[in-house]
Image (cartoon, helix red, strand yellow):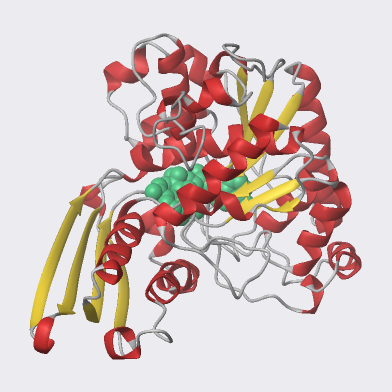
Length: 425
Ligand SMILES: NC(=O)c1ccc[n+]([C@@H]2O[C@H](COP(=O)([O-])OP(=O)(O)OC[C@H]3O[C@@H](n4cnc5c(N)ncnc54)[C@H](O)[C@@H]3O)[C@@H](O)[C@H]2O)c1
């Protein structure tokens, strides 16, 4: 990069999202509104964040990230997606009811133009949803090929130079890797054999990687988190990251827990509960789908507090997470945390957090950032699991699963370090 020049990434970037629901319609609407100049892209590090050029020198320059690395311009983005229910992004936004009518009015025809492609969907994995816009193909191999055709059609019809896929679809029923996930050969054979253990999100991930499209996993699904898919990403030279957007309660957890540890305050227990009334909440009301989310949410505290290094402070923590579907609240989730801590002479104290958040408002800027950063990574030749994207995830996928970083500020340092690397390459 030459001094005083703003690096740019030329060409059109297509952002493909399986799942045209609350999160994806809010991302699309926000980008459209920001392009019209009516709002700032608040919460987006790629658009509003700054970076200290020399990490060792606090007096060094702090340019905007978008002026430091050549990420795609918001004006060069085009959106697409698949959904078994929503017809287009406008309908999805109206059903999700995240954004007010007046915010949608100015962009309604543009939103309506983002038409959902028929989904690869199986109710076995999302029991609470009835799919109507679904590909009528029973073979999982044929479904993968049909998704690859969709990707290529979207690419040529929209004149895209590059594509990124971000899973914004529902959380699928809990499952663990099985034999079919152990290698790429086994997975491909499983697609041909219609193996029951292959979920729809895995078929999208396969189609994306085979099409050289980076894939980000916004749900806690087992979409990419198994050897066969990592092997495919490395073989094709495509970057991947996941999983489960780090938004409301877990974001708070990864802010508070490092602070407690820094001050050597002990923790007896952390009880987290939520009420949520959107389609995501309805899906998570099914125990098999909630289990997937629960596993993702529970992993956070152990790696931050490192009980093995401080057993007297963190050796015996009770950690519970609940989500209740409560329709009146819609997308405006309320998350309570009761945190039982202890200090000097073992005296007990309590912290109560009541976060009246808006789930999709928090998730939307993350989707924009991850699409732009993963596109940047792909252009820099990155492939396989991108540890430095952990900043965005509740259950980050790391190359070494024994060293998972959950501390938000440590994750930010990793992200910045990688951006500096890209800026200098
Ligand atoms: N909003 C947040 O803060 C947040 C945080 C972390 C994770 N997530 C996850 O992000 C995902 C999206 O959240 P949301 O609030 O937009 O949910 P949503 O229910 O509004 O949207 C999900 C959409 O995915 C569709 N879908 C289901 N199966 C599909 C398939 N096989 N192919 C294509 N589409 C499919 C559904 O029809 C629905 O329209 C969920 O998995 C959720 O758990 C959201």
